[in-house]
Length: 297
Length: 297
Image (cartoon, rainbow over all chains, first blue to last red; front, top):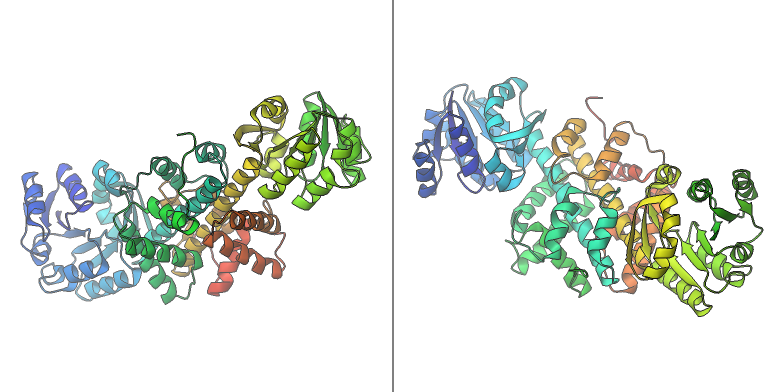
């Protein structure tokens, strides 16, 4: 099976490298030529366009920043759709809107090609380790064909439903992560301004019903005031925008998610777009005119 | 050391029973005489008023529904304060406002008595097992005296700060629990109405940054549409009211917690006060005019 990979950024580079390391024949493309050269140096084949990747591949993976990039790479001029053969499979691992994702799947199907939406969770460290969680939407027989290659990039790989269901699961994941960060910010700001040692409080409550992966990941960073991303505020704002667009298109009001999105916009207006999403607490600090501190530090 | 226990409800009954079972001398009181008789049958001594418990005890524990009950039991006519001796310690294990708690501590101190605020987390099952999490506010030397008796009722016992800090930690705990329930409700409603099998989705995301104790505790119940409390909506609304009162008294706006409180008020108006707080998802189902289902069930 000839593989293609388009989009060699922070995530796409280690993901495609894991395919190469597993011994697969991989043709890569990115508008950043040095990223292509780096992969070619590791044993991949370089291509000059998305269309060329399509011509040289049976399964074309992509990992791109936004829906507009996926649309342009698949359907645009020199797009994959003009190069790929009958029966080719496009696997979009970007986090985009399910509506956009379904539209692309339909356009591909009309040309005799297949698509899976397969966004990931876990960030750069798990992309490097090949231990990403992968949530897949599409036909089961198509999923079965691609599964061995997913195994080279992730673990916890789940087919959650038809086309669009992978991206929808990723949006649900992002609701949980970002609203949990806001919940943590409310709890820590209240407790800290009331004079509690928030490190002791965290130890007291983390094992109970209040516990979360967000609390365990972010409280230690907040105590150090370390807001280096991690998961960037602007990327999470993009995800929450997709959440709200999708929710509204099917008649689901999400009052808390929409408020967290507004908080991110406030932080972006304040020059904090590149901060980690754990830096959301800075919004609450501004609201309360108070800096959260680890008393026992 | 002679112990007292006032308030023998769902929580107070098993908690006081664990003190009796540990071999301590315990005098109990409740306005519900049959609860007193039950404890007396298990080896406790019965009293006719809170004041009488004060007279017969060196450490007086209490577990009452609301702040007004604690205030009345400690400071009201026939209150503990009129019976207890110099140096007596009042340990309030109810979940009340830190402001009220501090006020009661000051009144007791003025009469030569001590106080700890020591709310718990874990609910009836952990009260029965003697494995409650206990968050304590007060002086360290007072805490040290009471610690052996806390050990009979809980584990994960933490002194988090001065008077009021135990109740504040409990409020922070309740922010996390209740906002996490709302986050879960938003994620499940969006995903389910978009056509995903939410059980598969839950399995796909629970091990990542989206994971939480709330998700693990409540998703299985929601899939069964089991909203039997558990943690009642009206009790959690009371806690969130204390959260908001406390937050506003020290200048901390909490936009998400306040919205979840409003959602609980909507559910209470709809006759669901006694439902488990996981039943919050019914509010979202009403908003989206859609019932969340486990597709693979």
